[in-house]
Image 1 (tube, rainbow, N blue to C red):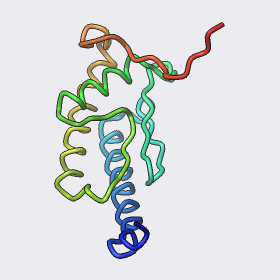
Image 2 (image 1 turned 30 degrees about the vertical axis):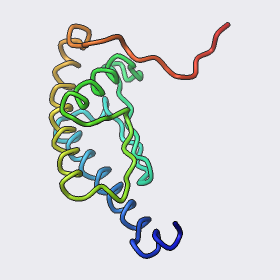
Image 3 (image 1 turned 90 degrees about the vertical axis):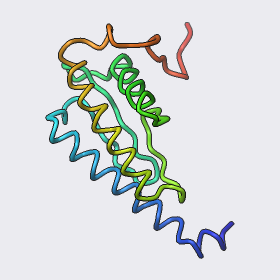
Amino acid sequence: TIQEFKTRKVIQHNHEVGNTIIEKTLEIIKESNLENYIEVIPCPWMVAYQFKEKKGEKSNGLRTFFLQEMILKGVLFQGIFVPSLSHGKQEIDFFLSSFEEAVTAYSKALEEGYENHLIGPIIKPVFRKYI
C-alpha cells in the first residue's frame, strides 16, 4: 500500500482535489452571497460544510435540505467531501455542478423556508445526550 501511494502520488493527488473543492465551493458560495449561511471547513483531507439559518445558528433542517438536493442530483453527500484517487476531473466537475445547483436551491429554501421542500424527516446528530 505504501509503495502504491508513493508510485501513484496519492497524497499529492488527494490534496490537489481537496484544495480544488475548497476553492471552487467557496467561489460558488460567495457568488450566491451565502457566505453567512454555508461555511466551508477547509481541510484538504476532508472538506466539511456547515449550514446555517438566517440568525447564523447551525440548522439541521437546512443541512438536511442541502444533503437531499445533492443526493437528488446523484451525489451521495453527508456534508463532507473526502478526496480519493478515483476523483478525476469528471467527478470533480460533476460534484461542483451539483453543488452549485444545490446552493441555488438552498438560497430559495433560506428565503421561503425549507420545511415544505423536505422529502423525509430532518436528520439528527448521531451522538446525542440522553438524560
